[in-house]
Image (cartoon, rainbow, N blue to C red; front, side, top):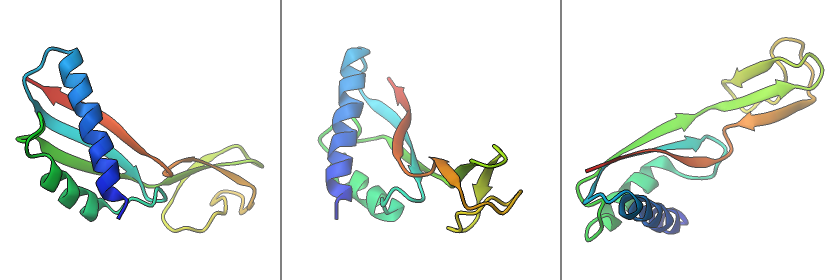
Length: 113
């Protein structure tokens, strides 16, 4: 369960930002998780709730936004959002595509007090 180590790093990052901005606590944490990131959102939420106690995030609302796969076709240069893991351009059916979003996890927003 690598979600625990991810949450520990996320909490550290939140606290660093809070301290740098002279905040007393973090009230909201928003992350974006790509569907291909390998991060299980439900496990991440559970881990966050478990480990946030005793941190500046103890009362923070945790919001997860799932990012679908976004590709750019190398043939027609159009961007598309994929509904399934079928890496084929929906415009021209070419299989030469580049994934441009949906593989990573990002801290998108913090609300501080």
